[in-house]
Image 1: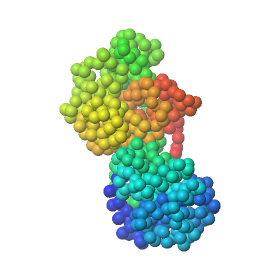
Image 2: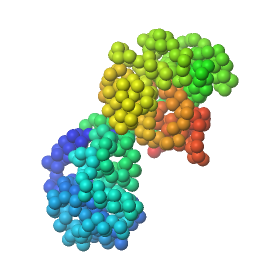
Image 3: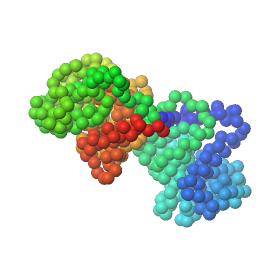
Length: 467
């Protein structure tokens, strides 16, 4: 599991550790890890041309001491000092190792630029001189490696309201930061390499599940299992207007861990569902969970959906079904799965605001409606009413295809019916959904049904691994 902490949490942990270590030890640990990562990134050190973009404070110090280590191994290292408060001991160490102080013109011939402009304490945006240096690197096609975070992003929210660095690699220390997981800032980080510097950290502000976490949570049937003990999902989806939504959502559900799916809907749509999936049972009956809303269109029956929300079975609420949500605060066991536009309508804000502040609005919705919200997007955010946040980071742009959300709703419903709680069902479902899309897109564009078709194999590969 990847764990991300806030600036305040990291600062407190660093202070506690520095109080027990000789002065400068923590910076040397960070610089050593950064130097190794830079060497790996460049494919070697000797003769490589490295330009350090150095601001004030410890972030610039990390860059300078990493530059010192690279210079001692034969790299040509130049520091561009963007502040008159650049770390003085770091500057002197670089000079003694054979590095030098220069200007942004050096970027024209650099193999890599190191973003040591501002660290986790920085505010969004870049000062003019720093922005000019970053643009010079971009102009010459020089890859930028960010120290801890890309300068200019909002570290605690993942927001990018102003100009910022777009890194080819980010080397971070101690723990991931929230901006490493949540877009739009996550897209500016590139791959994130974590250097352990020995911090003792509290519970994280956000997490991202990995393969071992999926294996630990996934409801695998046992020898004594039967179709009922594995879970029965009720699926209320599709309409004469959108019959395909029912077929697609059913495909997603059947690719999950449940033993049975009951389809409840118009006879004509039920016939199409059974033509594709003859194992489906059509009609009312006992279920362990519901997936409601995909493709209901003009046939949306709000009173009926609200009655199901008030029943004891947990519910995945998707698409048109989201209109049944209210702020009564009595929605235990519900997982809502909106995209940015749908969440914007629920909260009365513009879609663009949701996309710019994904973490903020997922949390706002979870608190306002007392419901776990899965906000779909390039990095899916799953926020629970108790404040827990999980982020899915293995998505692919190929998921942006019609019906993809219906697959996810069916899959999450299956996970609920098999016994997972809404937070686990949403985060496991999002991970597997993205893994299936990656598998299905190995040869190019995909459709929702191809994503559903890839789910069993994607799940098997994850469950069989032992990493």
